[in-house]
Amino acid sequence: MTFVTQFARRFPATFTAARHAAFGVGAAVTVAAAAAAAPYCDRLLDPQAMPEKYASLAPVYASADTGWIFASNQLRQSFKIKDKPKEMLEEILTTLEGQGVKVAILVAPPRPVVAGQGILRKTMGEAAADYDTAKALRSFQDMLADLRATGAIVPDLSALALGDPDLRRRFYFRRDTHWTPTGAAESAALLATQVSDAAPELVMAEGPSIVGWKGRIEERGSLADLVRKSCDIKLPVEKTPTAVFATPESVEQGLLGDSPAEGQSGKRIALVGTSFSDRYKRDHYRVADALAAAFGRDVDNYSVSGGGLHRGMQGFVKSGGLAGGDYDLLVWEFPYTQNLNSTKRLGAVLKALRAASQG
Image (cartoon, rainbow, N blue to C red; front, top):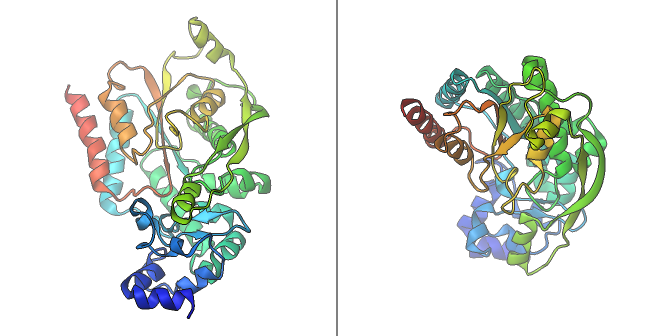
């Protein structure tokens, strides 16, 4: 009797749920197809066999051949924003701009799309047929268009990653959910270019922000941790280079305590984000450094690891970020996995903004 047959007989409800969890009701995703991709262990496909902390992420698709790991929460194909959340996002943007703060949004693109259909087939087996990278990409880009309609500056990081084969290969870690320092640095550079087009007074840097690559960081990998705790298999850490950033004159002056350069307001940039900008209790992927170099300005990082869509923004507002007029640009960073239809989280941001305006 195969593992799949045993699993289906022992856990019929779980078997049915596993078929659909990653792709939605009606998708013909089978545990048998996933097994064909040779996962590190069968427990990755069974939420009842995985540690409780990770059970909601099953089925988890992994392959020693490709080195990639994909949890089910990363396999969304629809990013459509509903009407009510759109209205709430627009109110958030309008409120911030009313305080003199322009908003730019960095949305890290879907990992499966960046990895590509070929990697998915090798990692997920026949189950990959139910994840359409082209469909997911279209939906993601439609979501970006909806965000732009709120008044925010929103670069398309999927086009950035897919437009350069080398960057595509290095944009994401294979055994971690986050972008690499390379992905972060190139994303910050693109954002600065688009902000410069829309509001040139907000960008002080001239020339490229990335002048080379030196040194490496190590990433043990959140998905590698999942495999270790579920399968008792320790995977190697991933090592990736970090950027050497230009140090614009305006930033040097700020570090020395001098007055702002001519044409510069002296105001700073606020970064409010997620673990993509606050990992291991620090900015592990150097997002703030990348933004500082790309914009030629000081950046204060209010990001909160595990804070989701809202806690970084809440922290910024509640700490008086809008009170002193110190910021004229806010960079809101969150990955594609965040739920923009969460009226509860968006409502928490609006509540903080309203309280700040009254106080």
